[in-house]
Length: 255
Image 1 (tube, rainbow, N blue to C red):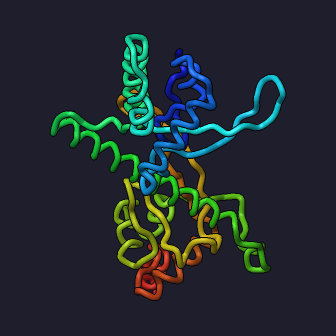
Image 2: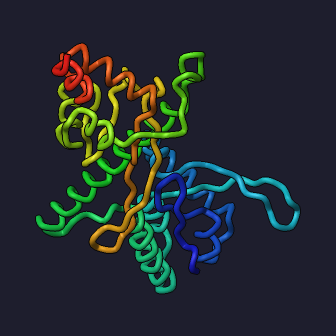
Image 3: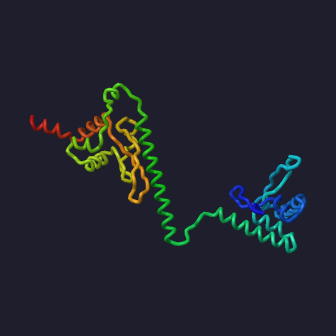
């Protein structure tokens, strides 16, 4: 009796076999009753019943059976009379109610709960977008193949933005803002990412680091450093915009 109603194709249903067993009827008689109902509601019968087969436990052969939703069962059970039948109808109604409640999403009951649900959904969307950005940049950083220039410039020493910014007498914050204005990078959720046109060129190397949030939960952040090739790229870009390293400004002043 615990399986009066099951989930099938995202719908609460019962079967002609289960109905026959529960109401102590021959399965063929239940099938005949369903066929009669289908003729009477021909246009809607597909919404109420759909045919399938089962394997008989004794002879291992296939036989026809039906799945039916709540409305199909209601029409079928109308013809079942007696106090025992009424008891089983009530049990079926209860079983349908429980199964259908499992299929319904948990809707917020108050305005506050609705707002909280929207906030959580937006935070999840932002988290997924941020992770996607992180993965894209990591993939792009690993993508380029080395050519001769790359080999010449390759170096195990990677530089932080703070280190490069110091060459120009700037803070990391001011330097990052400058690169943003020049269309090199953009900021999302507190992290800097290269624009697509600069990804995959070997300018940066990135790794994901974990940290502990104030509430004790674990968070992830993309830690990006500049390669020597990236440093050269920044030098040439900034020079085109009349921005020189401090050492070159000092040399010009001395001359």
